Length: 345
Image (spheres, rainbow, N blue to C red):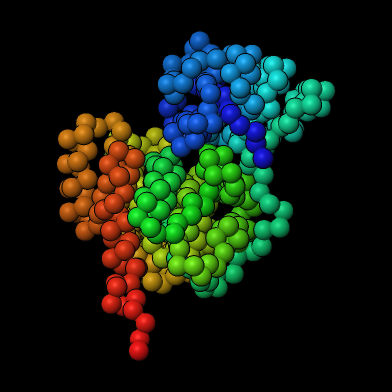
């Protein structure tokens, strides 16, 4: 287990999307976050107290979380130096980057000398099976997207909270570093060997017979040339009954690939439904989730209404406006009516 409270690392970053791991922890586990560490050239903040490593330890922090999520996930010299300083100050270090803390000899030596712990979050289990596509009991919802980092994790977590508030059993299933840090468990899907991606999701979301839902965090996009393979394997392994499509209307080009235009909502939804039918022919779309953080409230509400009319699906910003419209559609599509639920005589 990663010891909390956390000090969240922003480093030198000026990429709002690139600090999504730190931001996700600050939003969904605020009680476990005592502050943020950032260098003077970092123009971003999470609204937490800015602290150096010694101040964080005095405030009760136990782990520095390297909450960055950049393409390739490499650990540069700055990260190594800062991690060493954190260890010396008395903090453990946790990272979800593709580069492993354990592969940095200086960090390993310092941790052993100081009695500190290094946590590599992006380590998949060693016993992942090959997917088999067999129908399994239970209900599953998967969030999919037009692009990377458009709100799939936020939407899934908001749905979990909203469904539980309405008395529906629901469990968030994390598939990325941020979600795993928030939930405390999951599978780092982009670190799984390609042949085992669908099997990893079958393992993460096994059969359940309690009438509840597994809410599976989506990854990537079928339309992203770099990461579509992960998205396809996730669709097949999730065997979803329901899909929610996530989109950032302010995005003009694919994340990291500005020479690729964003796909349309309708074509993205149709492609995901087509791919998902391989393992669940009865899959259906239940909503659209927009990240309207860069829009005024009036413009956001107008866009959600227009999108709902165009696609015939409930549309909302799950974080800013709530998820009740999507939950209403889930109940309408999948939950038995009181008459249907009554036992026959």
